[in-house]
Amino acid sequence: MADIHLQAAASNLRKAQTFYGAHAVYERYQISSMWVQALKQHIHNILDDGLWGLDSKQVFQLLQEKHALFDISARGAQLPHALDWFERLLDQKGWRLDLLSPGFQESDLFADCHCQLRNGRRLSSDFLWRVSMLERLSHYLPRTDEKLVVVELGSGSGNFARAFKLAYPNSTYICIDIPETLFFANLFLTANFPSIRALYISSDGPGINNDLLDYDFVFIPTEFAHRLDGLQADLFVNMNSLGEMTNEVIEQWFEFLQNTIHAKKVFLLNRFLNRVDIASPSHPRRDESACAFQLDRYWDILDWEVDPDFDRSPYVRTTATRNLLIIARRCAAAETLAQRTNEVLARLPPVVVEDWAIQAYWDDDGELKSGGRYPPLSSRGDYNLTHDLTRSGSLFVIWEAYRLTGSQQYARLLLIWMMEHGGMTTPFEEIYFLTRAVDLDSSEGRLPEHLQQQLERVPPTISLVPQTIGVFNIIEVARPFFRGSKYIAVPQSVGAFYYDKYVSGQYGTLLEDETVDRLVLQVRTGG
Image (cartoon, rainbow, N blue to C red; front, side):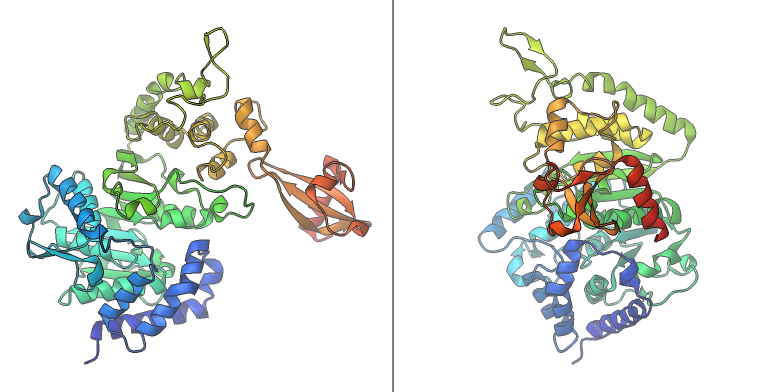
């Protein structure tokens, strides 16, 4: 017997892919490095298999085996302990599973090796992780019989959308994603709720807001998201995917959130304070680190926590990214904005004299001084294990001051916090964004000397400028964390160029500013 849900999802996928191909969408819509790899390595192969003979359950088993959408769930010896861990967490919060409806359990499509039957319920650690997020959200979005409109960007395989529908059955849930992953959400949700009304938008056209409320699920490929212009949504959801996009695309989606649709609240869970290897000059996180700093000042932050409790399971979850949870409410009143800005600025004076901010140290005479190398080795500040990473902590105060004012001084303070607490061997990836927000060569932006020197020691990126000057090749030397570039003329007879040779003056000549100006003019005019 044909799998009607699989056939319908496959048909929708083909329509969307036809449009994307005809209009060269992927040439304009930049997919991050990790998703390019996922599409090449797994998703296209799974789609080919799924469209040629597998049933829905087999498709999702293959999806989980390949870890293709980066979802993780415990199995084997870890599974019962992971379930125990999440059940204890939910019990502590008053969300006992035995008090929820019988249908509140993992889907039959979820791979059996990740599930266990407990008190008549089929459970996985992935499902309980999502239920734990719903518990956190319920403090700000109470369960209700009233109609809710939810927009999720990057809905993946639809697992959170399914859990949300179980908790808030009277809802229209709109899933936005690239066609290849939207296929899985389309299949998963229609197969799990066979009697619901679903709509798939497979072509461009006018706005569709008035037509959506009669549907339970709406599936929209990214290219057609503009058709939601003016949509009044109760909630906007994004988990992980905004942190997996290029900065340019991140900005486009925050423009969509903050100016295209009208969302009353947001639930965001994206990577934050994850370490990177800066030895690689082409590390993809250089241009994929803006997510945590894109909410404009017209949001009232209701909940904010780095590494929230539901992400702390010691089973499998430690292999995923560290995340920042943000739950916020849209608020445009000028007096409210001014009040919140004044409140957070009033919290700054004690923060800016904390040990890390003044680089506290003890001198040889036993006197506590500032301006030294921080943190001292073998001190509590050396890889502090007990930060307050909630709204009551210093990191939030600085982050919020920067969000509300956009001031370079608070971006600089954030940068110092991250460098003092994360170091520079494998620093937090957000330093890529923050060093672009701070002019490190200016007196206002310059960091404490030992931190400034750490950034200056990072090797530059070197590229050949297309134009030449006489018999010289022009080399652009860009320092990763500083604004502007240096240009060096190297005789074409030299051939290959190496930074240590020309910077020492052995082969290269540093060009004067006026020569660089002429060179830039040549590049722009094609002269």
